[in-house]
Image (tube, rainbow, N blue to C red):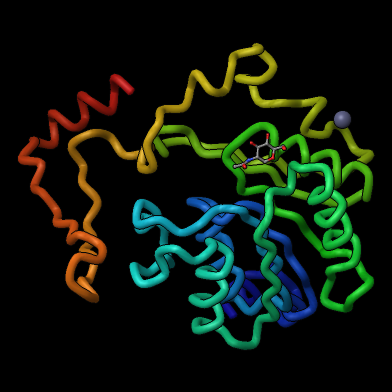
Length: 237
Ligand SMILES: *[C@@H]1O[C@H](CO)[C@@H](O)[C@H](O)[C@H]1NC(C)=O
Ligand SMILES: [Zn+2]
């Protein structure tokens, strides 16, 4: 193992003993889940309430035939094929509702590799403030170490924050600038599923036509724009 030879980790095999919860299986969460699966994590708990849409095809592991499945089911299916030795538990609900918050807390504190033990790490890969605050509240209450992540709208920059409850400072105490400055997060979001790609860049996928008049075929159009035009557009985003 390269990481071991480089002295970055002393006991790589220990990864088999860890349980990690990933909240949000979008751009960040799907890549994170796949990396941990390939590296041989012991157990992965996936939380997301969303369904798979063809617009999610820009995400690493989603496949066209999975459209209509919940995101966590689609993720589990793909990940299990990559590494069947990982124990997967998927949770298809909105963690911010009152009753689901209790279920979420229960899984964080009892859903470890050994049932009844807490998970080892929670990774926040969500795209909204409400869900981040929910994760923060749960982890503060449980003394659970977690990591917060975020990616800018144009996907050019992002942030990661390690939060250990009891050590300064939690997500609520040290919120991102947008929140601290009382900017309404919604004003920063554009509608549409593939909002982090600049206009002119088209997503390359083709929907296989299973039967007549099922899903219409989507084809890729060449934008015909020069690189300079695209760069200029990105600067204005
Ligand atoms: C999730 O639940 C919260 C709290 O009830 C609600 O505000 C939010 O709209 C829900 N999200 C979705 C996508 O249903
Ligand atoms: Zn705090």
